[in-house]
Length: 320
Length: 219
Image (cartoon, rainbow over all chains, first blue to last red; front, side, top):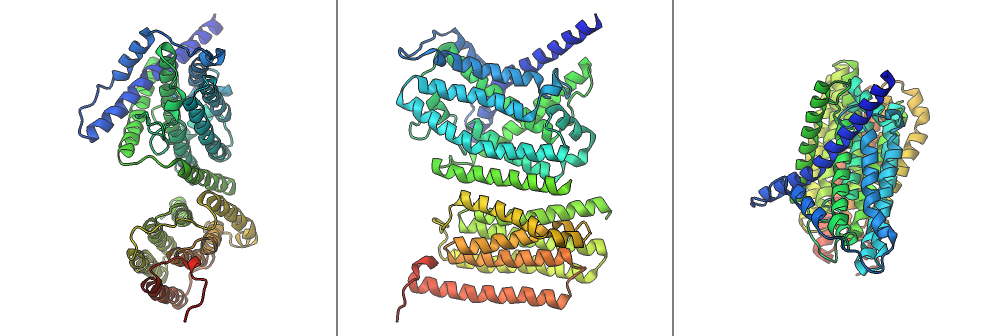
């Protein structure tokens, strides 16, 4: 009986985290758009506008290109499924998520990558010029991000002697000195660069235009419509919230629920929302003042991220 | 200042020195490169100040202040005046492209850590552990002098080498004599002045600061 109730709570926690990220994702996108338009002197749409857009998308008819195969339909589903899977087991609201011992940083990153790869494949599947161009660019950026990301995780794992995500967050909670260590700061800076690149934010890709010469992510999803497009929008925004939530919990873990209880979870939720909102707004402000980088200059940005991670790993190895 | 704060201040300052060295390779705009150089000079001064406060060494504190003034303000201002001739100038086509040179600089950092192992074993203080960062800054300076084409970038490379040497000197010794430190700093200051005169002459004669174009002899 006791065992059963334990399992039930674990499932409840997982569902709670997924729900928070699923609702928070579109809201974060709305918030970032709002901040941007305010800074540009416009009133802007309300923050909950992306949720309304989603309701519209899910009500619409689903159109599929005539020559596309099953990959086209599977892509969005896998994208959402991977994000849901990693969200359930990661330390976002609580530092003791269900199946926490299996939530390894490397594994989480590569499960997320599965979604990106499937999306690139389904963009190729339609056989249009834009889809191919978009997935080729997206995969190029992904290939440049991977080394930086791997070395950044390595730096954090060496410094904390574990790559288990909940353990990494708890170490930050229990030993605040670890947070300020140069290895962790360098690694997290590099992680932020990778997040911006992977989620198609401004110096890498402009999320608000459909300019054919420069678009990367929008080119991939050009053929999608209706519920399929809705799934992609949900998946992408959930991934952004998930990655930012992970980043802030590794950077400033205070507020994360470290023990069970409704009160602790409420506090954890508040802390997560506040931290992610601050980081999201900061990114939006940064985007107002930044121009999109030329595609051929991107390797420089990502090589910078790689070198930061490398220095972090070096200091971590030397410091131990 | 207790032990932990002292060593973390020292780590941050020394880390900033090497980070600025990377930034000079990373950025293309010459203005940004000179800005990174100024920040590096201040971080170097901060290393000397932290060491001086920790050891209660007045001479070292004076040296730290002088380093901040010379390497954080005077030298960058002189270099900036050369850049002012062509304010939009960029390091457009270095011999080795930016991503590769960043990775190369990472490799040089590893090399520095490997090569200074005996020295680090010898100097057992918490400052001693940071000696490789000085050597790495020096190597990055040499690297930048080899692969960059603009006269300004090469001056910056020379200054990186000098900052690296100064960092090693601060960290490895129990305080450089004031006279030696002043001698070294003034030497570099003089070199920068001479290089600046050269660069300005170059600019007024040929209207380029690209050293690779100067291959033929003229009367």
